[in-house]
Each structure stands twice: as C-alpha cells, then as structure tokens.
Length: 462
Image (cartoon, rainbow, N blue to C red):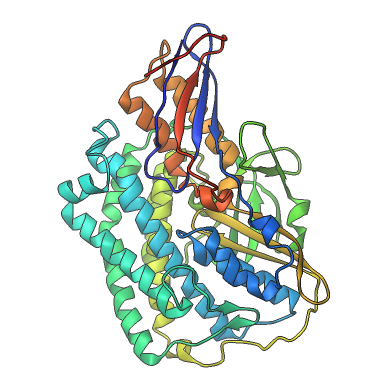
C-alpha cells in the first residue's frame, strides 16, 4: 500500500486536497475532493451595518470580488426597498462583464489552455503559463491584453480594479465620463476582435474533449432573462438531467428549491435540490439553460458548441469552451452598452434612508456560477443573519464524483503517473473552483492528493 502526494494541485484558486482510498488490490475504493479551509464571513458579518456589506464581502476573494460586491448590493436594494434607475442597472451589468472578461480570460488562457495547447502529459515545468508564453507568444499577449481591459473596466466603473466599491444600496455611487466611455469602448472593440479571432483555439478544444472524462450526470441551475444569457438580473431556472424544467426562483424562495449540507471529510459545504438530486452551476449549466447568448459572435459559437455536444451537455470538460463563449459574449455586450452615450447619465442611484424589508436576497451569475447573498437585518439595519451560497459549493458534489471517475481510470495497482495526476487536476480545473470564496482560508494549507491504504499499515510516500 502506498500514499501518493500531489502538492499542490496547480492552476486553481485556493487550497484543498484529494483523498483516494485504495482497496486491497491497489484499486480505487473511493475518492474525495477535500477542502480543509474555514470560511468565517457568514459569522463576522453579523452585527455589521448592512450598507457596509457591499464593501466587506468583496474581501472574500481577490479573483471574483465584483460578484460578491454586486450580489451584496442587490440584497441591500431589497432591504431598503430601492428600484434602480436604468443607468445604475447598466453600470452594474457593465461592471459584471468586466469581472467575466477578466476571470474567464484568466482561466481559459492561463489555467486551462496549457493542458490542451501544450499537452496534459507534458512535464509540469512546461505545462503552465510560462510554457504557453514560450510556445504561443501571440496567444499569451492577447490574453494579457483582454485581461487588462477587464481590469480597466472594473477600475473605471467600480472605483478600483480589485475590491470595487461603487455599487451601493439603490444603485451606483458615481457615473462614468464621456472620456471614460470613449476609452473603454475602444478597448472593448479590441477585446471583442481578439475574442472572435481566438475562438478557433477554443473550438479546437471541442474536438479534443473526452466525453467520458470526469463523467457525472446532474441537473443544472442558471439565470436567464427572457431566454437570454444574463450575468446580472433575471430568474434562476433549474432543469433536470434531461433538460426538463424543475422550477425557478428569483429571491427569498431559493430555500424552497435548494439546500446545503455537510460531509465529514470537508469544510466546504455541499448543495443539492430539496428532492435530493444534485445539480451544477457555471458556464456549462448556463449554456444548458439559455436559448441564446444575445450577441452575434457568441451565438454563432454557441451553435458550433451545440453541434458538437448537443442541446443538453453533461460533459465536464465542456466547461472550458462554454466559459470561452461567455467571455466572448461579455466582450460583445460591453461594446453594446458603451456604444450608447446614455451610459454617462448622472441618474445612477435611487436614494434610500430606512429599512423597508428585514430580509434581502441578491442572486447573480458569478463567473463560476450562481451566487446567493442572503441577509436578515433588524429594524436599524444591522445584520442578524448572513448566508452565502457560492458556485464552488454547488459544484462540490460533481467535482467530488468527477475526481473519483478519473482516479479509477488513471490509478492501477496503487500507482499513478505524472500524466494521471494532472488528469485528476484537470477535472477540478474544469470547474474553475474558487476555494477562498467557498471557505475563506485560515493559515497555510497546501493542496494535496493522497492515496491512503485501506488497511491500517504504515504508508510509504512517493
């Protein structure tokens, strides 16, 4: 019996481990995606003034702070009974597209692409962003350029490129100027051109995708607005594994549809439907939910995607091209919004002054999937209860099962190759998990893969 450590799993955000228990013959008996961090935000938010929540919660994560910022502000809108002016809504949507452009381009080009452009069986010293720069310098340059646009868009609208602060109860704290609109529009057009031209790379990944890799069959949840892809607004819809509608929700009634639960091997919560079925969120789920992306180039890419995988997609690695289609759509949508001079209007906020509802629930689509912020406050507006459900928790069961699926394929007689180790990592990377969002780290806890002997014998380490 042996214990194999892979430390760390590369190219994900946060710290975790995978535990694989072997049977007496050295085969896989079980495998678990194990998160060993602890999130404290739900507890230390209690007692804070709710209007401070949009400034506190972005600190959960430096990768997707915008998502927490906007979801928190939406919960506050409900608590203060505010209806946003149109420009305020559009600025929030534009802010979210900045998040999608930055996050999705980071993941696709720098985290996922090395596995496909360099090869999942290449040495780890080559299979990384530096290897990508060496082998495909023009692709690397394009990735840096579009990420820069995503960050600049966040900075101009959110006030800061990381941990934005402009979304407040009732709308936004400031407008953008005509000079900023012109600058951002030029950058958006350039980013869209890059995204269109580079779709061919993502398209090639479709042809390299193993349909059985990390296989798991689930229901799906995502937000759409009149059948179109939406990052900020609309109704959350749930479909079963055959594509039939299970139901929908838009606010406080989410607890009628889903529930959280815990397993003893992980600090990361799990989510499932109330009837016990499991579901997934994120790019794969959203593309299964929507009828269209709502922008021309992304809709054309969606058509190619569906020609390859079908109308309802269960394939885990399809998360990667689905993520790219969303990235392309956000670039196009940014051009659309910035092309209208009315985005510079100063009518960006409805003033608020008192608590109207003692509970508010903000639901948006973060890059990694549906994000829920649920606050209960007293009459003075101080938080008494806080619940955050992030995408990584909702995908936790699927990641756990996907890891086991791949482990059974790549482990034989208690041994695993370097390529096999990376293939286990790839199924986790496909979901682009954000462990800090899901838990919040305390201390240094490296990601490890453990193969643990079933019998109580001294374990050797490779």
